[in-house]
Image (cartoon, rainbow, N blue to C red; front, top):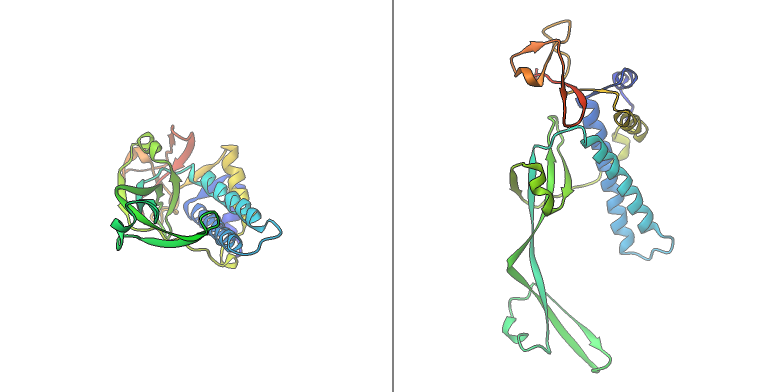
Length: 242
C-alpha cells in the first residue's frame, strides 16, 4: 500500500491523525498474525533451520510495535474470553478410569516398554475450573478494533468494565494491502520522542479554521483550544464525528 501524501505531511509536522494510527496499528497487527501463523506451521514440520524461533521473533517485534502505538490510547474495556475448562488426565491403571467412560473429551494411548503393554488414558473437564483469556479492548472508530492480552491479576489495575466475549478468531492479511512497515516505524519513532500531537478527528468541515472539540469541553463545545491528557503526557485534540 502506498503511503498517502497527507500521512507523510502530518509526520513532518509532528502530527499523528486517528486514521494514520488506525492504519499503522492494523498493519503491525496483521503482520504479527502472519508470522504467528508461520510459527505454527514450522512447529508442526521438520524445521532444521530454526525457522520457528525466527518467526516467533518477527511476531513479537510486530506486537511490540502495536503495543507502543496503543500506549497513546485509552482502552474501552476489558474483554474476557472463555477458553474451556481445566482438564485432568486419567490412566487405565487408575481406579476411576472406567467410572468416566463416555465423559472423556480426549482419549489416546501409548506403549509402556517397562510394562510391555499399551496404556490407555483420557482427559475429563473440570467444570469448577473455567479458563479465560483477558484483553484490553481498544476502539477508536473506523473499521478495526484491537486487543492486547493482560494477566488476570492486572484487571483491577485498570478499573474498567469486564465484558465476556465469544472465542476470538484472528487472521493475517496480504501485506501488499497494508501501510508499509517503514512508515509505521516513523510513527513509532515520533511517539517515542513524546513531541507529537495526536488528532483524533478529521478537519471540521463547518469552519475553515478546523476547530476541534476539546475533551474537557464536551461534544458541543467548539474551540481552538487543546487539552493535555495527564495520564500519558500527550497533547490531544478531539472532535465530534462529522
